[in-house]
Image 1: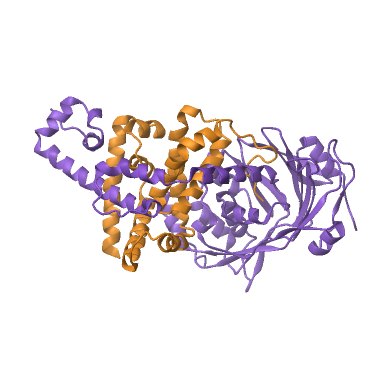
Image 2: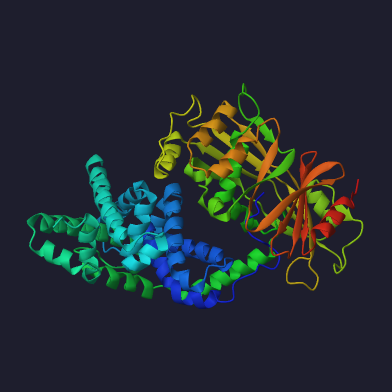
Length: 174
Length: 388
């Protein structure tokens, strides 16, 4: 028994379509960096825009808010790991990403390792890392995470170092 | 001069113009900083390659020898591959469906049940319903640990509810019986299919006209298997260390059952139902046998739930048989009222477009919802009569 939204006439912000059309690709791309799956990334983007549609976030802050929300929501998906195996099979088998089976196995395995490593990073570091590698500028990451532009570099640097450590540790324990 | 920070070195890789000239000059002539810069560049390249592996399935590109400088170009290629029109159509459909759905009602389409099982909000409902069972379990096989006797709201800011992990973060959830909601010809058919009596509305609110359509849903069930390892991982991801689980909890199973149910829906000439009256056998949980209070306390001890939610959940004991109903504080207000001597929860979204009244009596949950005021919904609820 769950009430998660205002049913009846849902009040949707007037600029939703405009914001959606300009920001959807970026939001999908942010989630895809975390999840490694197009389907899952689009699921996350939809979830994020549904929430955004009912919000009163100022239009000027929309892209930053959406990017942070996409990163958080995608990281939440990682935790549960749901449908991961199925999605990976589908992603590898479906669209000819990898030319042969060996490559497919390597890619899938790497993706799993990256997901596990991202899930272990402190949340703020993980979000800053993903946003920066999705092409947001230092100023944009700073505004989105309420950091000073100076500390964005520090946070990203720590995240990259921690990610590399996690990946190495994982590789040696496999 | 002192050395620039690691953060400054990192920024130098991406946005040299954002770094003070004095720092740039220092780095160019300082072996220690150049070495730090090289280390930063290496880590950045590894991260970039790793995250590109992640999005490779999106862009169908190989990711060997990715350099830091290619990051933004690459994210552009991810973006250009996305079908914005299809995405917009899907979002529009979701918004429309959300508009049609009613809270606390079993009149929603079948997919709603699946969506509900997946939602982070219900995760905690599920876990708490499942774990906050009665007393110690001495049983073999399935022991009934929870039978909903009343419903109480748990309110939190939406941001906190969104953060709640879902059930699969604590174990494996298998849906063993999907709800299959279908329309039937009339009230008699609804009673026959659900085994529940159909409520008659004494007096329809103003503006609600015509005859209702009837819908029934079969019994739904799911089995949840607790995994100490998954719970520990979830806790670790939230920066917490999970204490060792109580004996017997790891691998123990819980079964959650709800329904069957029926609903009468008045939707004549309206885009959204004007009135829905729904009844369903209230959720019940069974366990293969663990110490439940300990299990509930264990879950809360993981500290993965926002504190305001956790403190409210501590108040739900097995003895009270109360099903938590999660609501976002920004979106609706909940109050309590009396319906025929039974405490009911009244939910009113802040936009005032609709209201819902939910209560439980004799193991049956009943909901009245629609494009009504709270007073109108309560008046319908209090005026319901049952065919005997």
